[in-house]
Length: 348
Image (cartoon, rainbow, N blue to C red):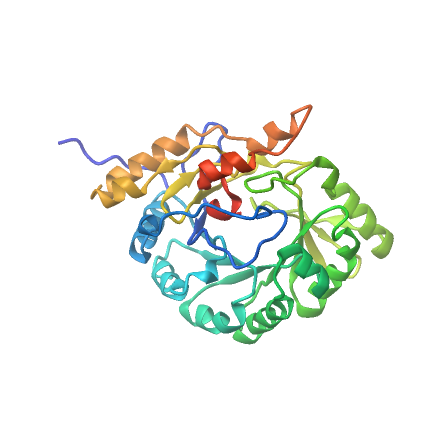
């Protein structure tokens, strides 16, 4: 018999990018209907029979961890819609290779879930919040849940979490006038605010370049208010560029649309039904659920993942940036044909 193949803790794709960070979607369902993510009236959902069990999801995380993944972010849809999320957290944190386990949530259900997630061992929380105005929140999400999100943020603080982040997608004509308000809110609650350029991915079927507020525009507006803003030097592979205000306040900007960072992207995404995507813009994924449920060995799964990553050359955001004419990535009709292309299916 041949000896088992040994892989280094970190192996590289064709652009010398390591596989370190995994976005694990636990559900494709969401309790909001944000205009930049889910603007259509009807959606096609993943069959419930195909959704990974807790044991399957945790088992796949363990496989990825053997190959160098040390950061896992639980996403959705809205991950807190999955009521057994704390149980999954307990399973994942047992693996000593996972150094950072976080969740990104819209915060609507967070007030009731925060303490349980903290007790289960979750490390960090990121809350998506695009506005501090209840009426604007209602228009953006088609739900009247703004107060619940604020309650959830307060619950995170009470539970004892450190490193709270607030993610805000900035869209022209919608909320670009709240940059300072959101930054001040983050300062008030001790959270790092990360402004995100409006991206043309998945269900952003109403996207246009005219609606994008660029990183340069954001920095210009903030500089007028605060004075000199300096970049924070960092060796991190995180998607946000960090900046510091004169008083020491740190914030981030994710500029995927106008300043792609594909060359330093160490992230991949696993959908709730076990399809592995190597890029947020990828149109096709690799099915891990079928071999898993067919009884594939850990070695076989490792081989499948290694084969996928070492052939990876994806740089979706850069390729979109290079287009002369840039329209929506996927039409609403195409999304109905394949729900895996939805942003709320593969996570952010």
